[in-house]
Image (cartoon, rainbow, N blue to C red; front, side):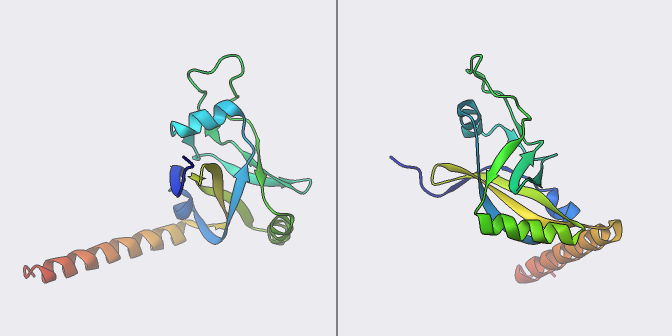
Length: 157
């Protein structure tokens, strides 16, 4: 029985707050055996993770995949640098955009797509503090509007 669909392992919710997302890419990731087993248990964290482009290859750094508890001496190192698998044209496009300056690669989510581990990475620009405050204010205002509409629909407002 082959797996179907998308099962999220970990997501980086803070990334959308800290960065303005310009473009997203889906990448495969080169893993060791015990890493996949640990991911199946949902034991990963994207909190401090970021991607870099070195020598025409994309690397995911600081991704934490907890050691597999039933693993032996073959267990993996939790924070090792892992290679992201992208098409050459996508890598070239990323290199060009990153060279423009001010842009970074941030992982947004890690998930199983039809049984294979995928990472959604985003080309992003860091937000300034006032941008973050404006986003929070906008979100709060939208929440208030939604509450008011909900109360009105129920005939309470």
